[in-house]
Length: 482
Image (cartoon, rainbow, N blue to C red; front, side):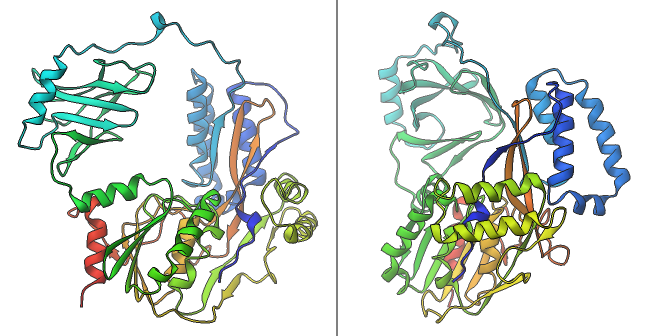
């Protein structure tokens, strides 16, 4: 079974040091630039690929932009855009809110939206009598119950019931134009957001921008394929569902270490069912990663032959090595078993003795680990893993292991491609205004099998002619072909 040391995927924060505390956007940018150049594991790799002259031109351009920013938000975004020169993932910048909380505005100061004047009881009766499915009706989108009615040449969504204190019955929640191509959705704080995606999914779901509404009235028949899709996409935790007598669906929305116990529990509880069912679909769409330990219990069901895992090298600097020391000194806080404590100390000592170098601290120092299990389970016989561009980091690590199985095929679209430079560390700026995330490790896959900016491709590409809510059925049909 694959066993990854817990500490590799614990994200912790630190305060940095040794930088003049002149708190302007430009000084914060210079701190980010210097800290990243000196400590990020992927910095030199990208400079070697793109060239120093491209980097210098990039810096000149962004320094000019930084000098002309007009707000804290613009400053944060500009610094983040500078960072994207290096990669699209495993880096971050965010402001630390140190301001004293302001008192809540009085009701008179609260922003307002239009009050939609409508005879609610009459509207409810009209809706109940509708025989055709369109966007008019009564919908739920927690914490709201929303009525949608066409008034003139505009569809208006208005609050019928709300558990949000600042939203009252009759207030306008969104508008949609007559041809259902665009509109405005008013967020929780009543600020307006333009929407360009309005789609009725089957008869009972309405997607308005990033929001999904479920029909309350009129009542139409349940569409099982669509219900299963939304159950999977809206799940906060893992679950297992029987699709038919030959096929199970295992949904895992995240490999976050905080839900490892839930993943393990679902697998343990359904052990007999999984080991007696021919086909298993694992849906990890939009699973952005987490901890490698979170997928350990899944591996025995995928396993057909020894799994080769490519290890990482840690970039040793004084700042980077603080993470290892913190993990050692506060192992209980991070949930690290006491038996690994001494290993952390040895890893810290090894890193500290090799400042400025890439060091392998796993196992015997080999760039590859080979994991062999005692047996191959007869069931499931066929495993389809559903993937998309929302998969990155640990989710991609899981796929690299799963792809080595003769039982497994990947279905969907190419993943995000954020894995080679990893193990994020978060540090606060000297002025304590920003928190920057950068990476401590580089994979031995580079350059021969780089994943970053490329992603992992599926064995079966699911193109746009197949709606996303039909992907599970598509995979099931393939696995059940005789």
